[in-house]
Length: 244
Image 1 (cartoon, one colour):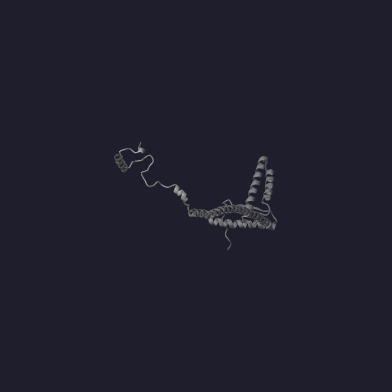
Image 2 (spheres, rainbow, N blue to C red):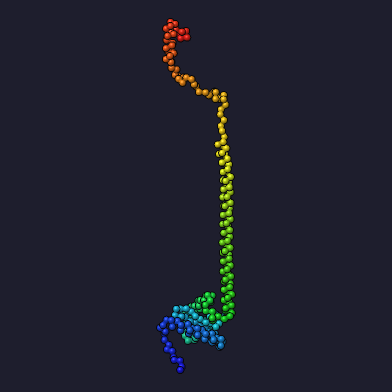
């Protein structure tokens, strides 16, 4: 029993639609590749998914050259059919050229990320590998230079810290050396005994003793002397000569 005819209409189920797109896309790319190999035809295939993702295949080394060839053929047919303004034609050609350039850059970016490598031949894969190796060497060189710069900065900081540590240690040693001298000075000052003054100096400065009433500017007369002096005057009947 033969296979029934599939009705061509939009698949409503999202998962089934994505699965069908992936299968048909891979089959279409495979057919384009087989056609280019078996018939030596220059094939260029461009597919955009519903999400805007680009899938492409080109049998020639450059998609841009194939598109330029297509533009020449298309514009030749347009020129044969109807006249076109030169300004519009140049603008449209510039647009197509820039569009093709953007697509080529996007494809190159995907190839560098390891995507869509199936359509590439051996030569293109070797070129991609060489480009990745060159980029990797440049990245490693930049990383090594950055690490060396950091190491140089750390060595300079270490040298500054060593000098500061040496200066602080020197000051600490000087302060420790001054402590025993200070202690010896203090101990020697406490052991010194001051000698007394010589005997003659002690005899020279002696306090006045005996009569505590002897004071400068004050000479009181004792009551006993006054009593003794009065009878003597009465007894003798005359005043002594020293009182005259």
